[in-house]
Image 1 (tube, rainbow, N blue to C red):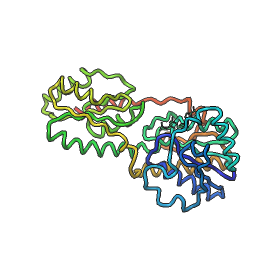
Image 2: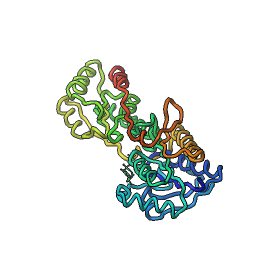
Image 3: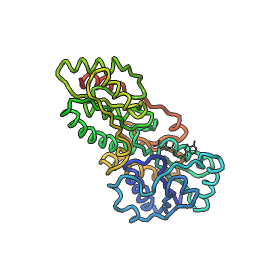
Image 4: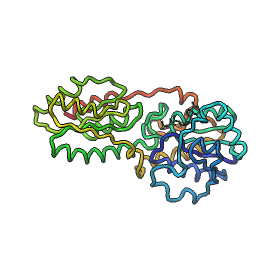
Length: 320
Ligand code: ATP
């Protein structure tokens, strides 16, 4: 491997920059040239590329977003788009690709691998919804941002004796909601992995808790459950408690990455380049039992991850 390409794809996540930095600097330390590809697979197809030197990744470790920009690329989902992408790699002299993103981005990487361009995937998404990895870059920062916002909401919720129904991100997964719910002492946490019962899980819990003197409530709703406003209306109608919905939205995708995201991203970027240098191709870098590991890309894409329902028991027992 003489030259590698690196791109960020799908939704952005804090810590992607730290991963790009690690890929660039590890590669350069081994005498491997790095081409930065902008805006995901779009940049590959359009030739939006630049050579990365040591200083090209200066002053980015603490910055959210991605200096390579990111995008979704519909053309790349087609066989023609993928063929064009592989040809572009050859034209640009790219011997292997490092793709930082989610499962969709890894499917793109697998398509390139099948066309003869070795690839390594690095899990970058705030949602933590990549099955092969216990941890994804951006997850910690997003959760901490959500907690910070909800702590602010709690102040005003408390002073008005209200109920705050807060929707947090996570796509179809409840990982962010579950952790944030525990960390903010939410009375109820609704996640897509577990159907809820409005009466049992929220209304009767609120009534019961009110009797013990509690007057303000936080309900966390995962993006995959949604309908925060309807839920707030329903709670208000059923309990008489003034209820407000807040959708935290994209603030959760930005901001300076936490230590955990910076360190994990650095380790993953380093690991990805080491694999390529050793001639180990078509892998996804992952965290397992707090160690950096890697899986075959096909295996990685066929794995499944489950929610730890013990966490719900923790929340239900303590946040009352
Ligand atoms: P996140 O879920 O965090 O947004 P992601 O990588 O899963 O990340 P997607 O929008 O699913 O996000 O995928 C990003 C890009 O990867 C797509 O726009 C497309 O270019 C490429 N991609 C997705 N699915 C495929 C596929 N089946 N084959 C080839 N390329 C794909």
